[in-house]
Structure formats: structure tokens, C-alpha cells
Length: 309
Ligand SMILES: C[S@@+](CC[C@H](N)C(=O)[O-])C[C@H]1O[C@@H](n2cnc3c(N)ncnc32)[C@H](O)[C@@H]1O
Figure 1 (tube, protein in one colour):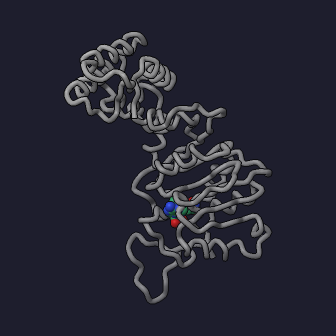
Figure 2 (figure 1 turned 90 degrees about the horizontal axis):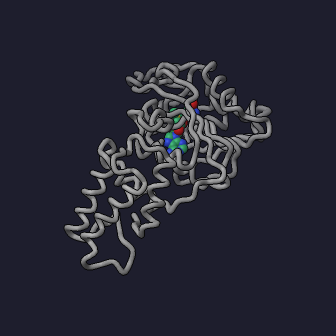
Figure 3 (figure 1 turned 120 degrees about the vertical axis):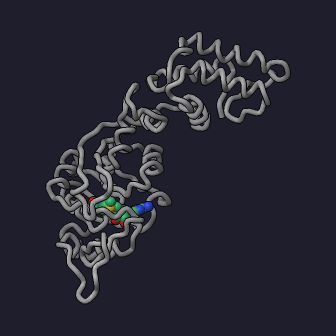
């Protein structure tokens, strides 16, 4: 039975770092570190603020320790699990219980699965999919109320970082463009079986409503340049970028609008620096810029006919 104690298989030597639960060996390649502390599971569900009317999305339910509590708290759980052995274990665990008709298990890679409607997402995920999964959730429509997710501690701290923090980076700004993010809980590695090499944190991601609309490709190109050297001044970064354009006119990240070709390259640098001066950004550094400042600077560039792709 899933959720039971680890047991050795008779006659077979147990492989190192491969504990068993419900007869299942855990695969590190699939990020299989299951939650073994029931108090922690309770605390996550309680902090998630699940309502009895909620449709809950769980990613990577594993053997179902979190799933069980989510079924008790919400109306319905839709769980996406890549490992067919875990899917079977889940079905076995909940079959014949009062919860069974409120659980839907989708077998597959969550990154390749079209997500159904859900009110709230609660998950202890495999850390290797943290970044693509976060962006998949942030782009999901209609927007859900919140996602409460266990991440590797450092990744979590990047998500919640503020301007001036050491971990403030492109991921921070890209995430906070679409959501407000809060740190909920620090989780030590010994709460998992097998314990991962890193500590973890649970964060709460609340999509912004309404969304802040940007041209995504342009926004990405712009932030890439800004965070190229996040501790240098924007003046120095963009002076360098404009020089690259002067050199070969073939910069694929920063462009002037049509009608401004030959002979304009030399003016381009002045134009870029003019924008930085106008907004008082020349001496500022990306590591300390707020989301609103990034949005404002991009709007000034666009107004001056400068685009990023
Ligand atoms: C960290 S374990 C969490 C297990 C369980 N939720 C718990 O807390 O005890 C991650 C789970 O995600 C599953 N998984 C790994 N990659 C996945 C993917 N791309 N899509 C869906 N599930 C995945 C693993 O098989 C594993 O069951």
C-alpha cells in the first residue's frame, strides 16, 4: 500500500539510495523524493488555503501522500504523473475509498500535457522542471487563484527576490511580471524520502489579474540585454550594445524602425543613450530596477522607435 513504511524486497539486495515504498523504487532522474512527514503535508495544505469547492491540480502526485490530504480538503483533484508505476500505485491506494470518484489521474509529462481548468495548484514537483513548469502555469488561461509549489530553495528565493537582493535576476522579473510570489515555508531535506541534496521552500504564486500585457519576444530580448551584466550601469551595457550595432549593423536583439538605415548607425547610440538619460536610467543597474522601471524603460525605447526581438 502506498504511504506505508519502506520495506526491503526479500532475497534481493537493496540498491544504495533506492528505498522502497509500496514496492516502488524511486528514480532520481524523475525527481522522485516523496514527502514522508505528515505534519508537513498538513501544513502545506493548510497554508495553501484550499476551499471545499476547489478543483485542484496536483503535479507529480507520486504515491499520493499529498493527494490524500488534497482530496480531503477540496472538491476534486486532477493529478498529472509521468511514471506509470506511480499511477498504478495511486489507483490502488484510492480505489474503493470515498475519495476515488473525485480523483482523476492523467498519465503523462506535465510539460507536454494540456492542463485542464483548475482553481488552485498544489504540488511537490521534480525540481528539474521548475522553470518550464512555472512559465507554463503563468501562461495558463483562465488564470487560477494560486499555485502553491515546493521548489529547490535557491530557485524559490529567485522567484521572491526583490531589487537589490543577490538572487534578483531575469527569472525574478519574468515571473513577477505575471504573478505576485510569496515565500511560505522552509523545508529541510530530511522531510523527503530519499532526501535530496538541497533544501527546499514552498512558495505561493498568484497570477496578476488583469495580466500585464507585453510583447513577449520583445520583453525577453530587452531583459536579456539588461541582465547581461546586471551589476553594470545600463549606460555602459547599452553603450556597448549600440557599438556592436555600429560595427556590423546586424545585431539581432536591438533594432531601429524602418526608414533609418545607412548613416543612422552612429546616431543610434545617441538615440539609445538619449532614452536612458530621458528616463534617468543611465547610471542605474538592472540588479536594482523594479518591474515598473523595466516596463517604463521599454516603453521609452519603443516610443523612440527602438525595439528588441
Ligand atoms: C518530488 S516527487 C513528489 C511526489 C509526491 N507528490 C509527494 O510529495 O510525496 C515528484 C513526482 O513527479 C513525478 N514527475 C517527474 N517528472 C514529471 C513530469 N514531467 N510530469 C509529471 N510528473 C512528473 C515523479 O514521478 C514523482 O512522482
